[in-house]
Length: 383
Ligand SMILES: Cc1cc2nc3c(=O)[nH]c(=O)nc-3n(C[C@H](O)[C@H](O)[C@H](O)COP(=O)(O)OP(=O)(O)OC[C@H]3O[C@@H](n4cnc5c(N)ncnc54)[C@H](O)[C@@H]3O)c2cc1C
Image (cartoon, rainbow, N blue to C red):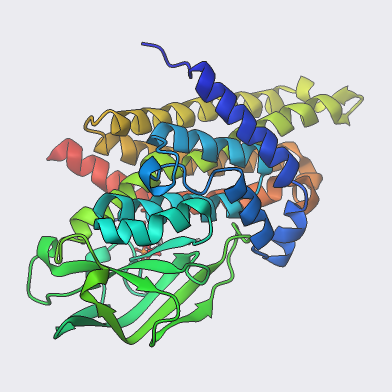
């Protein structure tokens, strides 16, 4: 087996890292302090060609596979250290564009994908509700058919890009009595439709440069042409694909953050002196660096294996859940080590690792918590 990237993949990742160093990293501290989404930076990311990575070429994207899309996210996180930007881009690509690319009609793809791939439109996916996160089937948002339209009512929360998006894929219960596999339908809801609004902007621990909002739907009339995929099947079809992309691909952002923190910690351990010696000469610091390196290797291998298996059409559910569970917990553990290695300076935001710790925590929650991944893994083990 050959785990090396191809020369082309290495060159692509290097180009994304260089772009991120130059365009994303400057100002990230101020953007995080202000909790500011930067539309100009988004335009630069799109102009660089990242907004349509996995979108098929016929719809204006690059047709990149899961592994390559993950490489881009990893490199962007490494070079830019802006986890919020990574979150917004990752969500746009994996749960914004991909549901439409995979389940859309040709008209829906023509309408949305070229605009999304160019970055002119941003995508979002809304399944979580105030009282139903892990238990997605417990959602209350509903849509009832009235003639040729559906009438949508409910509230979605924690929606990444929800207030930026021109189109949001919204999952709602359409049959109160059917089993889960036949009870939910996905709709492409457009910004500006009557009854659809951003009802709350959410303040969060980390990833602050990415806007997260609550969305409300009050008698929103959705035309039949905006139904995404087969009615009734959204939970297992559209929802499943979204979670799968989050677990195999989007978590590569956390891997990039871990790598950058490790490199910064190695540099700091060589420069910073205590008791007349570089702190890197102390065993306690060396052990932390070694554990950070081991976690990075494991996290990267698990993510890339899951992505590669998905790309090759191989069964990969247990790999995706293992990757998601491991990367999230490892990212938090390594970010804690990074803060500790930096001592008091690590507790200040200007040394960046404090932000890494706040940002990393999301990887254990969004896209299915660690506990839910463990539940899925154990179910696959026990049958
Ligand atoms: C910044 C951010 C961005 C997000 N972006 C999006 C988005 O774009 N679109 C979207 O739809 N959602 C999004 N989410 C929502 C996210 O996917 C959910 O928060 C997550 O799935 C957990 O759901 P919950 O918050 O309701 O927690 P709960 O489901 O209430 O879980 C609470 C705790 O109980 C545990 N738990 C729950 N059930 C079980 C069980 N059966 N066994 C063991 N433990 C269990 C959980 O692991 C957790 O520790 C985002 C969340 C955040 C924080």
